[in-house]
Image (cartoon, rainbow, N blue to C red; front, side):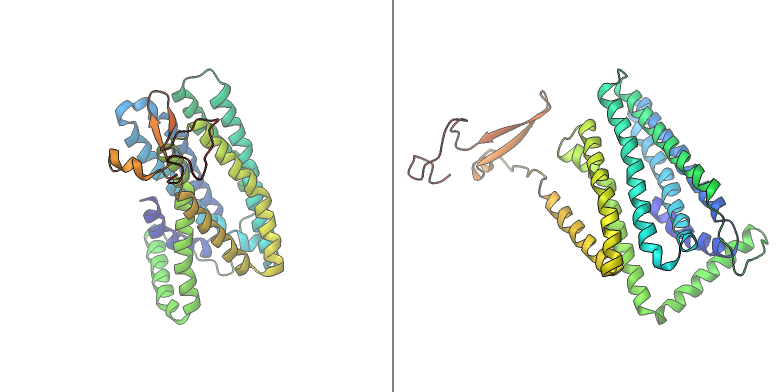
Length: 318
């Protein structure tokens, strides 16, 4: 839903932002929406059985603020540095972003492991501090980053005329795109891989918690690990882009990402289709709701001091 709203509105807003000096204002509004509704997500556990509905609504609106803000945020890039420095600026920007995220995740991990608060309050604090972190660094950007210059500035003639003009420009662009096949193919590819990357990134924690039964603390620890690894990798791929080209670096990164994503899906436990189905496997894991742990069952139990021989009874089948 959030992506749909952004997809419908962002092109028109982009046209207006390119003709009027309002990029910072638009980004500030998107950021404010994202920050407010992210903080409000912390209240969801206190709504009881309706909490999931509250969380869903807050998440969708907050995602509109985040995704829409990113569209405007990326539009600043050509105005911040020379074209030859794009890879360098982009890679270091991501590296600093992962550094900031890692610092906050460390704080959140400490809250989950060491604070005496109940779980609901811990989660509320985590959402609120995430929002404050977002707004704090956003405020620095609003203060220090100048509004990009507009070559042919459009005069504001009201919301209705601006909207009609923007969508008319979008329509003309779509008609013209047929003349640029490479651009059309790139936009389609970007849509697919960007959506795929973000879907995996946003669903990874849910996959870990629901499918693999990883608790909240371990989930945050894993996210912290991912962010820590991403810091040097962002810089490394930036340098790789300088030497081998942006396309090569992007293709290599996507290949690694796809390979790891497919491999990670293999960690999902297979559901047994009946009692007899267990005999098909040498090892099975079963989740115990009482202990909140997996229990390992082996088809041929030799004990921890046992050993397997080629001629032993049952060992050949094993």
